Length: 300
Image (cartoon, rainbow, N blue to C red; front, side, top):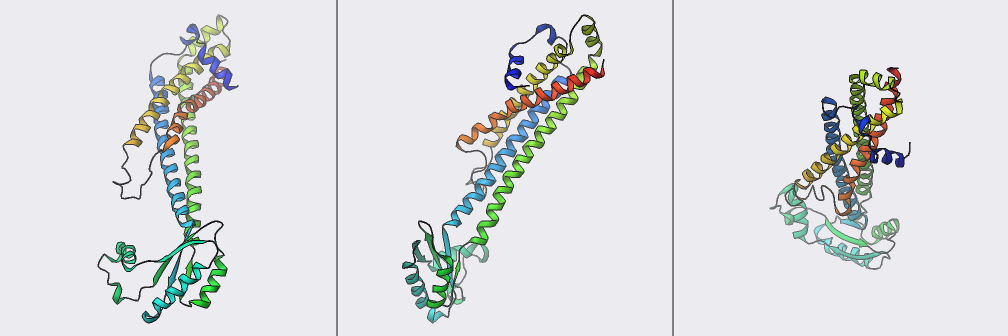
């Protein structure tokens, strides 16, 4: 069955065949409710997985083009080694800029863990030098060797151990998001199949009469397919819109303290949930068609 055949069956209603399926009852609201609920959950699965992936990517990209040099030396040698490190960095290809962090900047970095009144002047805290890459980057191993010769107390941290877990986290979050969507669609297909079977069983007498007057099974199945597909399509549309509205009510980046930055959809991502209703309709079409043809064989 091609998608064009699906659309053709939906566009060409048969009023007599539609009477086979009751317009109301538990199967009607069950199909619409399940489709709407699953679409609502799918919107949140999409929003959370995309936002988490963007967050991990943003952190990874921010660390990818930067590195830090930690200088540990006696107080009387700290300024000398800092100048030596900066001199080495100025002559290293692939490094666009480098600067030593001030005491105030280092105190701001440590404040979340040790408080704002940390006495840096009385503690042996290493001096940090921040560098930014340019072009194709620098030779990390060569830079380590030069630093070992010019400033023995300097240690290069290229953030590799931070970038790799974030990249892995981003890929796994996307994978989990996709798996969640597939599970939601599978659950919806199962529930719609049960509803279609219940409706077919409830109309067994009507189906027998239709067969007596010459109706073929494909004619009867088409009535169930069209009715349940439209129910799922309508329910999924309402659920998707409700989910998108709920996403807009999530806390902003400022209210979330920065950790939930970008939570939800951004830009063209808002169009992604609009694909859920036609996907739900397609799932309902094939699930109902298979269930109807199988049940009609059982009622023979």
